[in-house]
Length: 164
Length: 164
DNA sequence: CAAGGCGTTCAATTTGTATTGAACACAATG
DNA sequence: CATTGTGTTCAATACAAATTGAACGCCTTG
Image 1 (cartoon, each protein chain N blue to C red):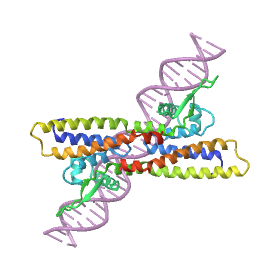
Image 2 (cartoon, chains in turn yellow, green, purple, brown; image 1 turned 90 degrees about the horizontal axis):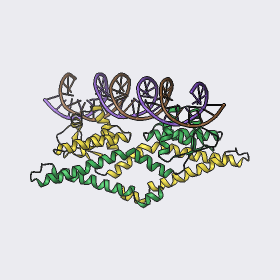
Image 3 (tube, chains in turn orange, green, cyan, red; image 1 turned 180 degrees about the vertical axis):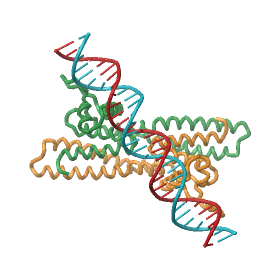
């Protein structure tokens, strides 16, 4: 660690690895870190030059970050370029990124769960339940329980406060 | 939804998509779901046959699941194969999987953060602080705050109880 | 101790996805 | 209205990670 530029560089690398580990590419993390550690708002050109990434990627990534509320568009008078600065609301950002990550999947899983439950209930009433019905029922109940607890936790006031 | 086998099949597919979205392959989720919805302990051969995956993949995936405590090795007398049954402790499983997902990254990020902090502190004392020092300091403080809150949240009793 | 059954390993391959870059649309400017 | 400076799009590509399968080692059994 020799000078201030080193710090930024290493945080950029670390953030890149982090977002990559989460399944979003390296660029998103790097871009956010770069902007976060810049005193002035940054343009797409700044990003492509400093980070050595393509303009297309910069454009898409910035848009993604904007959607998560991680980055904010600012206008600078007399400038035609778009400039961005970092939002510091880490908790909210993580939240949105997480929803993006598992949102669709859990949604469809939810649908499958209720569909299965109703089918199973109906199938019981018919009077000719398959041999597995009880077993299935018990297993699905456990899933349902967990889903409910997780859902409750996710929306709990404590989480909202601490993880704001 | 026509019969009980349908349910299992669709849960297998859903679980596969879920683990894939999280960055672990499709197989891990499918295998767990298959075992979870099996009344009897399952062998590797069962898995390769039912799911149409290779023996190598089954072996590695099962080992991973075992490490997360998602699956338990059981012995059946007179059988030479290894059999596995599902653990239902979803919370604990998720916890371990999450640690695997972000553990290494956050660890090295932690190290980077403290290293940067000490460097910055030392650099202040030298009397010739770069122009950016204050800015850097403020930004790193925000990161530190978030890290501490996240850490506290992760280890909070509420999480431990609800997400057990 | 030979033979067959079983799980494991790892280099090769396949698959999925991030990234690129050329083409494009739009606005501002002269 | 041509030109220049922007950001966006998306098919092509490159890259990383998941998956395969043949080779291996270890038991067990006869």
